[in-house]
Image (tube, rainbow over all chains, first blue to last red; front, side, top):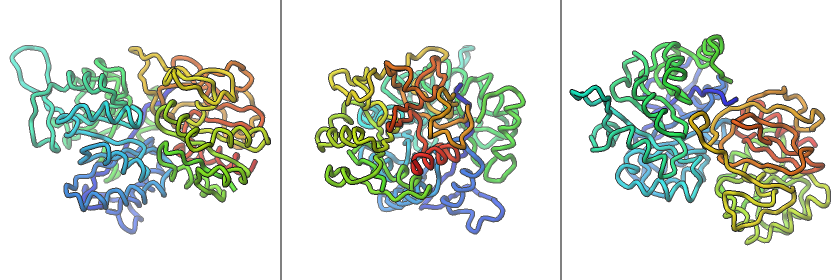
Length: 255
Length: 202
């Protein structure tokens, strides 16, 4: 049986990890290669790197960084941030990324999803969706899609957009709740459930992890296929082995 | 010397890195003359079945693979590199596979219980315990999968391990000197590296 995945995420800027990382014994806690190795040792199921660098020149740094990481870890990893076209995807895959995560450009130019899936296979095309709850008078819950790292609202509704990206050939959805992100109050279970119930591709839930129970809830109640967290792991509030042990005891299939 | 075939289907560095970590001397090549000289061949691959087979034919590598296998030299196909060994695939029906292993490649049928692609860590259940790749590997170990299609060989005897994803599909194929994994050993941490080491030390 397929196991549920626990995925640490690193935010990268100019080739460095920018969210605080507090691993003891690391010579350089901001060096993504070193951090990636630690997560590999902890048997993370996968790694996600999100590059928040904008300029072209600096994106070349990302490609060489991906190469260095690929040489040092033996686990799957996804790279996202600033992907605008097939050439960006090809560069990252050739550098050793297993999957790429597309967000803003997927909204601006949805055909990129089908072109990329046709060219490289659905299994390596992840579409990231950043969603924020809309307050409506009706009881029907809705979430608005944001792009540009959560700064720009769009006219898309998240569940509808999820269905559309699946139809276009995305292999996976990385779903972040803007409301929950950074709160440590738990994943947005309603948002996650709504999306996992609407698509038949895997969904990675992101935003809000604060304690072990949150992982259990999102992987079982909301049927997420994977749960992603960043600062929780960086600060070692919880370690990956601790979470997996807890989930195993609760009967969730993990590696 | 182990050759990793480069036919333009995805990145080969992580495959190479894993083999080198396990002590292998490797080359990445698509030159028939170079490939004819090596002891072992690894055929990785990410992308679509049709593109992959056509790329192999374009480089004149189909013959090289037939010959290598006929000479009883070890061969390892990974993921799409496994599919290519069969006769045909639902992924690209107009293009015939190499037909080295009788059978076809099929797509998982998505349902509310079954997401496609099959992405993540799943267990390999040993069918043929004497498979040389299993040395030092526990039955039901988890390895990393990332695929929508799976091989369905005609002869059950070539199935060395299966994996449960809605159906029991062939996750390790083994026939004499031919080995193939549906999962990515190079991405499967210790278990994957052990399987690679077992191939390297054949």
